[in-house]
Structure formats: C-alpha cells, structure tokens
Length: 134
Length: 407
Image (cartoon, rainbow over all chains, first blue to last red; front, side):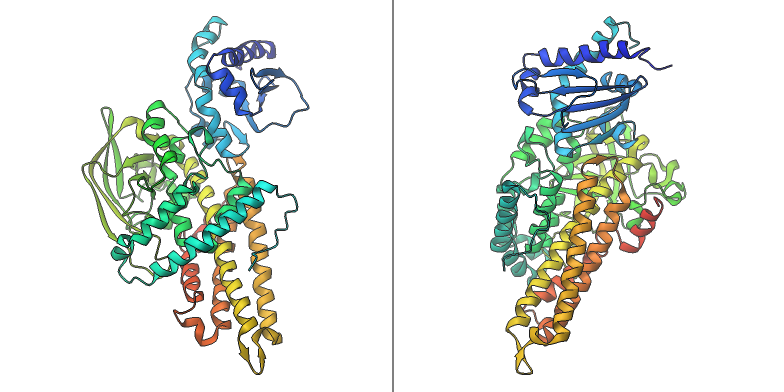
C-alpha cells in the first residue's frame, strides 16, 4: 500500500510542502533566483510535479504535463519521496540505489540540496498535520 | 596551431570562449611547466620546486579545481559538455596537472552531496573559495595489496568475504577510527590536505563493505610516504598515506556499506569519463606535434609530410582522435546528466581513449625518428604519459571485465 493513498493526497502533501518552501522568506527568493526548473516524475501514485522559478521572485508549483523544459528531472516513487523529505534516506544513497533517478547536470542537482533545507525542516510537522505517518 | 575543428555546431559563444581560454592557459602555463618539471629526477624535489605550486595556484585562481561544484559555494558548476572541453584542453597542456587539479575536488564534491552545515563550513566553502592551492584533495582508494580490484563494483569477486581491504574504519562513539594504508598511487597523495578515503567498514561483505569519508590530513595519526618516482605524468604527485588510529567526526563518513557499491559505481563512472576525456587531449598533443614536425622536417628531398606513408599515418592518428573525442564526449554528457550512470560507457571511453593516446603518441615518436626519443622534443613525454594512462584509474584490462558485467 503506497504511503500516499491517492494522487489527490500526494498533491495536497507534496504540493503543500513546496508552497511552504517557496513562501519561505529566505529559501523562496533563493530558489526563484537559482533559475532552475525541477520536474518530479512520481509513481505510486503517478503524477508530474514542476517547481519553477515563476516570475523570478516567487517560484511556482505546477501539477500535470507542462510545456516547460526542466533543468533537473527526478524520477521516484511517492514512498521514496516521503522518506526523502523525512530524511530517512539521503540523496546520494537514493541515487546510488536507483530509488531516485536524476537527469540533469550534477552541479545543478547539488545546487538544489542546500536550497531545499527549509523543506526538510518543515516536512515532518507538515506531513503529520496532513495525517501522514512520520 | 589553432586546435581542432569542433564538430558540435551548436557550441555557444560561452562554450567557445571557455575552450579558447582554457587552451590559452594550457599552452602558456601548463605545458611549459610540466615539461620543465618532468626534467627533475627526484619527485620530492619536483613538488618542492616553486614552479609546481605556482602552476597549481594558477589553476586554482581560474577555478578549474571547482569544475564539479555548484556555484552556490563559488564552484564553476560546468555543464557536462563544458567539463569535457575543459578537461581535454587542460590535458592537452599537461595531463599531469589536469589529473592533479581534477582529483583535488573529490572531498568537497562528495561533501556537496550531503551538504550539512558543518560540511559546508569546514569542507565545501573553504575549498571553493581557495585560490592559492592551500587546500588540495586526493582520492584514497587503492591499497598496497589492492589495485584495480578496488574498482570492480557489482562483480561476484567484490562480495567475496575472503578478500579484505587494508584500511578500515570503525565507529567509536561519535567518531570513526581509521587504521591502515593507502597505496603509492594516490594522486596528490603527499601534497593533499584532505583525502576522500574509501576504507573497509564491514569485512564480512568483502570489498563491497566499504565506506566513503573525508579525512583532513593534518589529524594526529596521519603519515605520508615519499612521492612516487614513475615513468610518466611526473608532475602529478602520487604517494602513500598511512592512518594510525586517525579519528574523524561521525559526520565526515558520507557513505556506509549499504550504499558503498553503488556510490563506487558513480565514482568510477565519473572518474573514468574524465580520464577518457583527458587522454583525448594527450593524443591531440602528440598528433599536433607530429603534424607540425613532419611539415618542416626534410627527408628524401621533401618534407616528411609529402611522403605518402607519413600522410597515411597522420590521417590514421587524426581519425582515432576524432573517434576518441566523440565517444568520450558522448559518454561524459550521458553519464554526467544521468544518475545512476551507465558505467560501461565511461569505462569504454577510458579504455578506448587511453589506448588511442598510447597508439598516437607511439606513432608520433616514430614520426620524429631519432628526435622522437630525445628529451629535446615533447613527444617522448606524451608517450610516457600515455602509457601511464592505460593503468591509471584502473588497469584497462580489468576495467573491461568490470564493464562487461553490465552487458
């Protein structure tokens, strides 16, 4: 049984998480200024999630197929995603074990990691508030 | 010499500038320095010669040590195609310095995969901001009794518990304790300030029970051996490192046995793609010298180049170099854009390009005739450098067996 019971739940939880990140007074503008489009190809449940720089000041969360070329593409399951944000699995281990498949230049992927720090910090409480197991 | 015609018609102005600037640096700084340093017989005297560190510093000032690192911390953050262009040009000037500067980033590069505040403050940022080569990294993997067999992830032998590593890491409270020795072939070994070390953690898993950690080499218990005296790439410092109960913070262990084999696969894939690219540069250096020489050297009443057999040989060299560049560039672009990588392509590039470099340098020596074996001309150095490349970063024969497991 996938940790996200439905696509709607995944949209609510992961979409909400990225909105927290993009609204963060420090990380939000940093992400927008980094000019990186991340596409998550999620499975179980399946979904496509884009995080874009938006207008360059505040980024944007988009679900579904978009006519945007991603700078970095991550392919992973909903379960891996949940574990990743709970810090139960690190990026290099997930990449090494093939739990996350990444497409895009390594420096760009590595650049994302520190920007995502507020999302790591926020996820346990956010996920719990959404009724997710933490 | 204008260099080569790039068959990629989509290079941006920025990429063309990167190529021209790197070539200028390689021609004006790296080539003359490596030729001069190559003449110093004692490898200890070589690294103590002011020219050695001055050259490293110049590479650092231009940021070449941070090719793989994100711009967040001041790295060059080169994309895979740019990385290929840079490594080929650097190695065209001097594969010795190209390897030395390239491997220097290993501790900071791996730290940037798990960028905790501590690792950012203590490892990544200081390295990226370093411009005087006072922070130098090395990759400590091979051991006196373990050479290329340390580079055989996902082969059955790699999990054989009877085959044990000679450097171990044991967790003791909040610290890892490192004991053992790494081989004389650790690039930057005796000049490095930090080592990306691959010790054994779980011996029951054989060679696959390793870990990846950062060891600052000023810690108590670290000792370094003498610089290796070797055939080629003499301006690349190499030497052993000894660890006698060296204690590192728990946080400096980046990878443990559960992910070791897969991370080694990524390491080898990254390193082999880079080495393949660099030896395209070595091959080109030898070819360009031979082409220029045969156009001015008169034999039998006309320039050597006007002899049909010589033309045939030179075109053969040219073809091999173009094929090597095509393969190494494709492998690097694919594998530096996809994680996990397809290691067989990186190994194919490494084996093919180092073999091509050796064949081309061998022909170049022949085309120079007696002058080819004289130290007055650089081709004999390229020949020695190329020979070392067939063993460096994994002996070609063994690497092919590792790669074949993926077919």
